[in-house]
Structures are given as C-alpha cells and as structure tokens.
Length: 264
Ligand code: KIV
Image 1 (tube, rainbow, N blue to C red):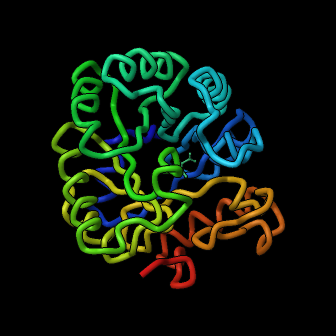
Image 2 (image 1 turned 60 degrees about the vertical axis):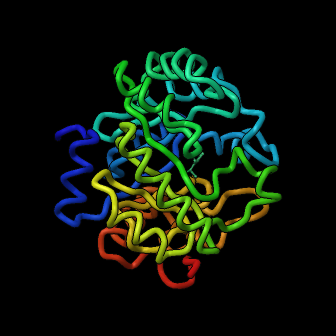
C-alpha cells in the first residue's frame, strides 16, 4: 500500500481520477476511513462546531488541533493527513511559521490556511521552510462574521474573478492543494482547469479534482443544520464502513455531488 502524498494527488488530477477527503478527529474513525480508501484526512477546525458544540470555528485553538492531529496520526497509514490552522494562528507570517511547526510536529503532513492575497507571503515562507500548504478559498468559515453568515461566495463577476486570481496567486506562492468551499460550480470548474495543483471542492460542484465532506454530515449525526451540499451516506447504507465506501464510489463515478448538492 503506497502512501498518498501531494504528488499522488497531482497524478490523480492528471489522470482524471477523482479522489475523496473526509474530516477526522480521532484515531478510530481515522483508521476506518483510511482503511476503506479515503485519500485525504483533514483535522478540520470544524471540530469547533461538530465536536465542541460552538456556532462557528473561531474558538478552536492550536492546542485543540494539535491534540486531535496526534490522535488521528495514530490511526492513519495511507491517507495524506492535513491539519487546519485555526483562527488567528497565522495572522502574521511569524505566527504562521511557529503554529504550523507545532501541527507538523503533532503529525500533520500539510497545514491548511483560509484566505487569499494577504496570505501569499506566509504560504511562500512555510513552503520554503518545508511545510506544505493547502489553501482554502470561497466560504472560508473563519471569516463568517465578515461575510455576515455562512453564505455562498463568488456569485458576482468581480468576486468570482478575485477568487480565481487568488487561486492562481496561491499556487504561484507554493500552495500544493486548494480547497474551494461553497462557490458556484462553473467557477470551481474554471479554477480547477486553471491550476496544476489539485482542487478539492465542498459545495462546489462535481468538476473539482476531489471532494471533501465533514464526517458528521456523511454519517448524519451533525447536530442541527446539515448543509445542502452534503449527503448522509449512513442513511442509505446503515453501516459506517459501507457509508464511507459509498461516498468514495459515488465521487469516483461522478455521482456525488449531484445537481441537488450544487450551487450554480
Ligand atoms: O474545518 C473543516 O472541516 C474544513 C472543511 C469543511 C473543508 O475546513
């Protein structure tokens, strides 16, 4: 079994092979997802909502992510493990470097940061110092209060152009992966075709190179609101490992996301 790296994901992109990602926060779920064939596991700051019960991701700390990264690392053999940098842990390049180092030492193989042009210097700095970066554009949840809620981004031409420009600039700065969240499917397609690095979508249509979902949504156990772009695979399969396999198969075959999960 060969380990998934950013070069594996690039090969998948070149070959047109769709790949899957899921969030994970502990060793047992991580091990189940990994052994069923999920390619990328993200210790997401979504833990603020799905584990800690907050209304947004802002209260999550570097220590929280580091603790859960250590747990997940013990369960993973094959998947690429990404750790989210939480709110205000990368507001300056120096903070980014110190906090990213903590997450890499906790077991991450890559860190994820939310934002565009203002992050270019940090992305370059981290990459040059041996820390691979996954960028995140569109509905970046740490900016929920700037957006005035969890709203679709990139709907008008100016914003769509800005997101596309930022995606290209982040790739040029050294980002090795990009997550695009809650943007119209045609914009996600344009970004995916414009970049050589793999693009992972969530609420971004079927044309990105990979898909990511929050595990609690896939298993239908998120408290309260379940996003429209997500799918409860446990409901249709009745068993956790089968649910994960169904998610992987549907992404590979282009069945998920369907029209009903997509913003146009
Ligand atoms: O924190 C998270 O889980 C994420 C994914 C939704 C992409 O950032």
